[in-house]
Length: 188
Ligand SMILES: [Zn+2]
Image 1 (tube, rainbow, N blue to C red):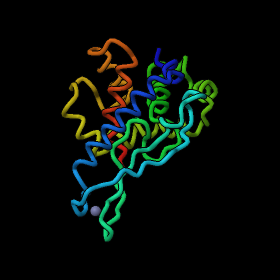
Image 2 (image 1 turned 180 degrees about the vertical axis):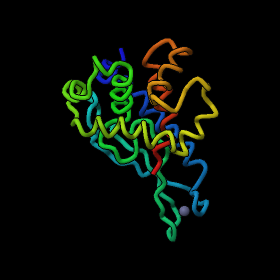
Image 3 (image 1 turned 180 degrees about the horizontal axis):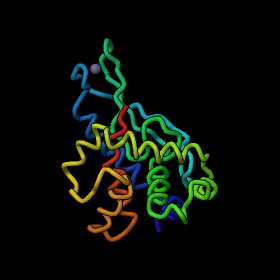
């Protein structure tokens, strides 16, 4: 089920590959500031909350750097592994918030924090983020037109997960799809 996916290394392998593809598309577009070619400049992060033995190669934030001496700007492609500067994996944030929204009695904030070894403040912060910040974000407004009108701005990201469950056979696929959608919201 949804919670068990956080121990599934193959999920992170798939997301890592998507991040590489997103970076490659971004690289082909060239520097957004001066149009010069971009170079790969990935760096390793130490995200929390995922499988214990995750290979280090999946902990890489794809990043690009302009090749022109006078520019040298860094360009961050969209990422479905990482949500901005948040210290937990994007998948952890999505799953924990969705579990709480699906069943707050069985998955209380305290229980989720204990089960996934996350600080209580982080869980509260993610719930607040999806209630107050995300529905107003430009990423969500862009997405809004591409997904079912049944998905309301309340109860995000659970509504997004439920909506994708209608057209996908497994929570694995749903999660990948949701994280792909959310990748564009966290480019900083
Ligand atoms: Zn440039």
